[in-house]
Every structure is written in C-alpha cells, then in structure tokens.
Image 1: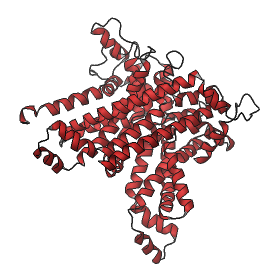
Image 2: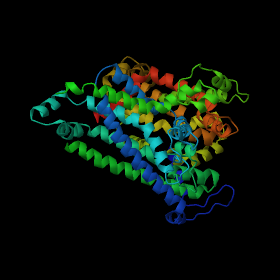
Image 3: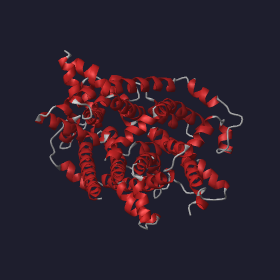
Image 4: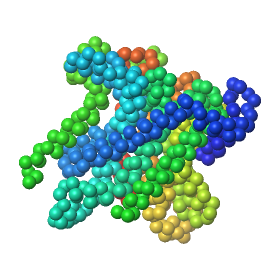
Amino acid sequence: MLVPIGITIGYSFTNKNPFNPPTKWVGLDNLTSLASDDEFLTALGNTVLITVIVTVVTNAGGLAIAMLLDRRGWLYNALRSVFFVPVVLSAVVVSVIWQAILVDDGLLNSMLGKLGMSDPPGWLSDPSLALYTVSWVIAWQGLGFCVVIYLAGLQGIPQELHEAAAIDGCGPMMRFRHVTWPMLAPAVTINTVMSLIGGFKAYDQVQVLTNGGPGPGTTSTLAFQVIQTAFNGNHVGYASAMAVAMLALVAAVSVIALGLLQKREVSS
Amino acid sequence: MKKPKAWLRPVAALLAGFLFFLPIYLVLVNVFKDGSAIVSNPVGLPIPPTLDNIQGVLSRPDHLFWYGLVNSTEVTVISILIVTAISAMLGHYLARSTGVMAKVAMVTLLCGLMVPPAVILSPITEVLRALGLMSTVPGLILAYVGYYMPFGVFVFAGFVKTIPREVEEAAAIDGAGAFRAFWQVVFPLMRPASASVLIFLGVWIWNDFLNPLIILGPATGTTVTVGIYRAIGEHQADFGSVFALMFLATLPILVFYLAFQKQFVKGLTGGATKG
C-alpha cells in the first residue's frame, strides 16, 4: 500500500515515459507546469464542481427522503431498500442506464419529443450541460447511502427530546432546527466526508457517460486526467505529479471537513 | 391536527420512490422486450415478454458474459477471503499491541483508506509487471488485497476492542498457542466484523471498473463490469442486449445484497450512530 504511494511521489519528480527513455530527474518542473496546464486546471475545476454538487444534492436530498421515510411499516422498509439499490450497483451499470436515458436519441428525449418538445436538450452532448448531467448521475447513485445513514441517525434520536421541545412550544421547524439537526451531527459528518471522497475520485461515470467530452475535457476529472495521462499518453512522471497533487487535495479537504464537522458534534 | 394530512406522507414517499426507481424500472421492463418495442414504447410493460435478449447474451459466440462471470467470481471470492483472513490477524495484532511501531503501522494503514485508486494505479502496474503478474487474474487479486487491506484492518481493529482480553488469556492457559487461540477463539467472536468486511468488499470488488480495465487489459479477458463497457461500444443503439447483459451481471450482486441486506445496513450504520 505504502510502496505504490512512495513510487508515485518519486515519479512525480521525473519525466518518466516508458516509450521515451531515459528517465531523468526533473525536480519540481512537473509541479510547476501543472500550475499552467489548462487541461489539468479544467479537470481540477470540474472535480471541485462535481464534488460540491454531489455533496449538496446527496445530503439535502438524503436528509429530506430520510425524514419522509422515518416511520415504521412495510411500505417504508420497502422504500428504504429501493433507495439503496443503486448503492450496490456498479457505477458502470448505473452510467449505462443513464446513458440510455440521456443520450440525444435516448429514452428521455424521445419522451420529451412525444410531449411536443421540438428541440430537447443534449444532456450529454451539450458542453455546458454535460458536467451537470454527470454530477446528477453520481449523486443519484450516492443518494441511497445518505438516506440510510440519516435514517439511522433519525431513529437514534430519543422521542422524549421531540416531546419535550413540543411541550416547550417548539413548532416543527423549531424542533428540526434545535433537536433533529444537532442530533444528526455524526450522520452529517459521515455523509459529507463520504460524498467528498466519492466526488473526488469520480472516474467510472466520466469514462462511460462522456469519455471526458464533449469537446476537449469538458467533463474530465482529476482521476480521469491522471489515468489518461499515464496510460494513454504514457507520461507516467507527469501523471504521477498530478496524482500527488490530487492526493494532497483529497487529504487536505477530508481532514479539514472532518475537523470542522466533528467540532460541531462536540459543541452540540 | 396531524390527522387530515396523514395520507400525505405515504403518497409523497411512494412518489419519491417511484421517480427515483424509474431508471431501474426502464432497464427491467426493456430486458424483456424486442428492439422495435423498446423504441416505440420504452415505458410500457413487456407484454408479451420475450427472453430473446437474455438468450442472445448467454449464447454470444465470444462468451463475453461467461468469461466475465467466471473472472469476476474468481477475483471477488479469492480477494475477499484473503483480505478477511490477513486483515483479521493484522487488525487484531495492531489493536492489541502497544508498541510505537504498531501505532505507526496503524496510522499508515488508516491513511491508505482515503487514497483514490487512480493515484496508485500506475505504480501498481509496474510492480505487477516486475513480478510477472500484469494482465493476469492473480495480479488483479494481489492489487485488491493491497488496496482493501486498510479497510479490513480498520474494521477488525475497531471490533477487537469489544472482545475481552481475558478470553485470550483463558485460551492461553488452556494450552492454546497464539495461532490457535486466534483462529479458534477470537476469530469466531469477530463474526460481525468478518461479515461487514466480506459484504462490503464483495460489492466493491464485484463492481470495480478501473482496476480490471487497466490491470487485466484486453488480452486476458474481462470482468462483468468491463464486459458491459466493451459491449456498449459494439452495439450502440441495441439497448435490449446491453440491458440484458447488465441485468445478468447485476443479478448475482443483487441477490447477494438482498440476502445480507440487514447486515449490510447494520455494518454501514454502526459507525454512523456511535459517532
């Protein structure tokens, strides 16, 4: 586990390319050229945007659905399973399903066409739309995870707290604000961190849905860019520098998020 | 005051569930329709149902599905058994020992939990190539064992703390060696942890795409996920057979999930509610 990371960090200082030997030590050149590499910067921006969208959608949607399903009975149990199904599906399968729905002559647009829409959007072929479509697909798959975690959190809140707050004159909004939300802090932490990490390593969906396109790199992510550079471009050294940057970013964001969210847990 | 709106919650829940499930419904109904019916009426129920798509996938001349199934099963089963066995021992050892080295090893492993696969894939291929294991199934298994070891250790080390030390001391007094005490006394007590590790890794490894795509390569064949990816390149608009392939590839993992659903959710929420 540690050895590959060590090798990656080592390579990040070289111009290694298996089809263009010899490998030379280039010091920090890779890192400095990353800073002015448009493809890398686009991928970085895309990754951040996907991560933010996925984190917000899965947490907000997951919490809303969890509160809706927070009742006993077969209906709610069955629906909980329904929401969780995409989590156990492969990202490839999920992407192929959505691709069939969202391609230009796909199921969604043919339905929109029947409803009389003459020029339906190119969900995956419009460069200004494709990134949001990819984010949506990732969020759809991750939603069930958040639902299950929030449900467990909600069911862990003692009923007495709600009753006490109601007696003290709190309406539903106030009860949510002062009882539910603080008590859910650990669930929020776990869901946010998992969504952040999941968003940062987005690869499968990009490869299947858009292959980084439409156009040059409009939906390319960091993971996608690293793999493309290393295995299609064979610039192993340069890709390693990217990978190191990505690793540092994931580590920094996770640690910061974890720190901030856990502080909230303690104080509440 | 709540009474008049009592019907609202089940209706809203059903509606949300229905909208959410729509994409999966589309796959399920279209697996059993022929090509023209998919195009003319994608949403309707398959009446009369046809098994042509499924038969077509099962009897493909290149055996794409069968090779994928064999590879996926082999890789998943062997990987999860090895990871469970080694990480149980390692997790137990690291959680029980108090030395500085053990602490360092533990922290290092935990850092490994958040490394994205893309970051280390390139060096992994070089290590595998040096070992002569690139483009082989054992190579892929080795990569998984390394990659998922931190998760296994994390789960087992957390669980070991709930097992009283006296149990092991008693076993030692009864004359069991360290190895025997672990496998016959401690390991059976860690069944919930083993279940979590087996179930999660089973799903993750079965569904993985990037590692088999790169490590196995086109020469050695595919796993089911890579098979699906290859298949969409071939028959672009033939949704029927792509859906049938996905349906068959997902069936094992779905059955697995439904069978262990309770434990899956328990393992997931265990950490979340304890905080």
